[in-house]
Image: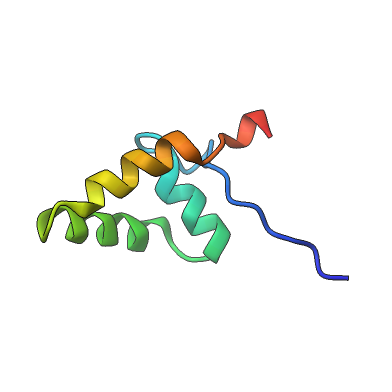
Length: 65
């Protein structure tokens, strides 16, 4: 049976809140790619900052899981 993956904010790939590191762990990619995507979204439209803040609030921390 396939083990279900869960999204958590990273504790060891953290720069601000661990959102990008957690997404990178979940999708198994480099966290820099996720950070660049958030930066591009923030510069072109401003939605990157809003999405990051919402994920900071909604996604649980890995240490509390």
